Amino acid sequence: GEDVEQSLFLSVREGDSSVINCTYTDSSSTYLYWYKQEPGAGLQLLTYIFSNMDMKQDQRLTVLLNKKDKHLSLRIADTQTGDSAIYFCAPRSGARQLTFGSGTQLTVLP
Amino acid sequence: DTAVSQTPKYLVTQMGNDKSIKCEQNLGHDTMYWYKQDSKKFLKIMFSYNNKELIINETVPNRFSPKSPDKAHLNLHINSLELGDSAVYFCASSRQRGGTGGTGELFFGEGSRLTVL
View 1 (cartoon, rainbow over the protein chains, first blue to last red):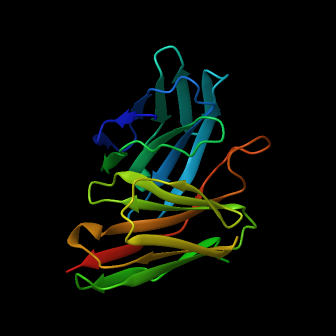
View 2: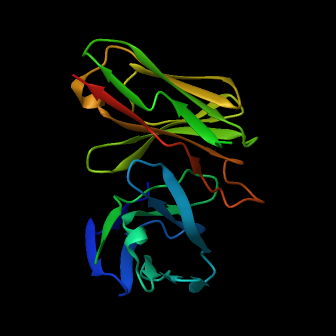
């Protein structure tokens, strides 16, 4: 099955950029998602990228995909305190279920 | 209107008891899931149903029994609760299993925090 790895913790200062990294093992992953989990809440889809794309930009969010290295990253520009949350990388292959990484706890310091 | 709703939100119970968590989605989705999130926030799939049919059953103890009376509901019953069952259980749904025509995005409930004493 798919293995997905992420760093557990990231701290940044308010206004700086955050970069959350993810590596995965299944090269047939077709959709790669980023989910956000705020404290005490369920996961919500933040953004996603198709496997035939290298980059996707959505306002403050930039997703980069390196298929050769099976590496996905999420960049958040001008990070705000409201961005403090756990971010999950989740690749999906075909009709299979999503595989979630361990999540990266992003802490934004004032 | 809440898209995916779970009840109860919190559940505290003694070891050995039997408990149920209910889930309902009003999105018209065909597929529903149960995930378990442990204390380290690691999220692991337990079960998935598509149109009331069980399609994913990960290596979960048979003390856990899902039931889907219709495609809008997926309940989780747990027998003989153990300390290690303490976790947050998330219900989720998606439009379809992930075939053509959809991104397979999951919509999550807010979670049910189970504490076994």
